[in-house]
Length: 427
Picture 1 (cartoon, rainbow, N blue to C red):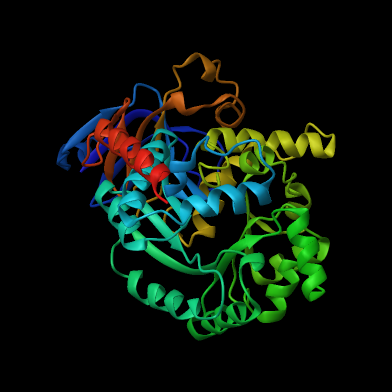
Picture 2 (spheres, rainbow, N blue to C red):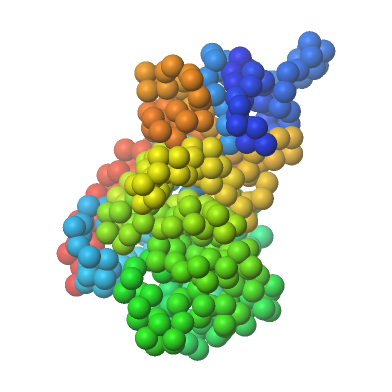
């Protein structure tokens, strides 16, 4: 058993207050949260005891939308409009990728996630066997999202992956999904809807990221992407819409009705000038909200602290209201909302029986002082420098700047550099 003592606990279980408690971890799960009696301590056998020295322990962040292996395109094709960036730069380079590339560039992403207190990613990409291997070797939790595009022939592959990857590892699940309306023909979307009905399963997809996407969908089908997916039955069992920037009131009603999660990616949407998602309006209408970074080619970092700050700051600007999108709502979306959007229902809080996916926040850093309000400090002034420890499934993967992922980080950096040079020279 692992014991975290002499600290404060933000359990995210209904209270926004940090309390002086202990957290015990056994067999990958939370075994105890509270103030133990002397007898409990005396009878317990601890493999390790962490003296938190007054620091904060809380559930980890979950990244509800990303493309991890796109670390290879970080800072490669910046300062371009989204459509030019995607079709003229990103897609041509991605066409050259091998499974070996995806394996190493995914490991690089895992390192970055851990430094930001992220223990799970909702990842949409390809070369799935290599992606699976990278994450499981690191001990990192991931939800793989279907990324098919093109014509209906891809639907068979989606179903095969859904059946193959679910149940294969306690760290990995797979959810139905496709890239976007604008990269899929009508028959493919019909096929996805049929799978959703067959398995009574949620579907996740890029949705209304740009004005161009929405306008062209209306021109083609007479409906917004959300309206089209509703008509097809794609969202009958919930799911997630990634970005949801250009959203109508009717789109929001569909999401509320179907329990679909709107995953906001404020860093990427700002950098690509896609716009500001109407988070406050969605919240008022009862839409579920989660947070993602998007991929490192468009963000360019995988930092939940920056996403949280941008999420609230952009809403305040958009509404000309400094009270919009308060810190406690933002933190809840990044921790609990994102976990629920990914189907990680047992990774939302620190309570007995929950998965031991947690982080330790260094409160002794100057940016966390004074402690008028710890939650507001996390959202408004917190940063990656405050993450002292990241634990996933009861295993410490990052502690005080050092990684425990089964691979020397320097080897990962070096191999990624080698592969990138090779990739650029491939025809």
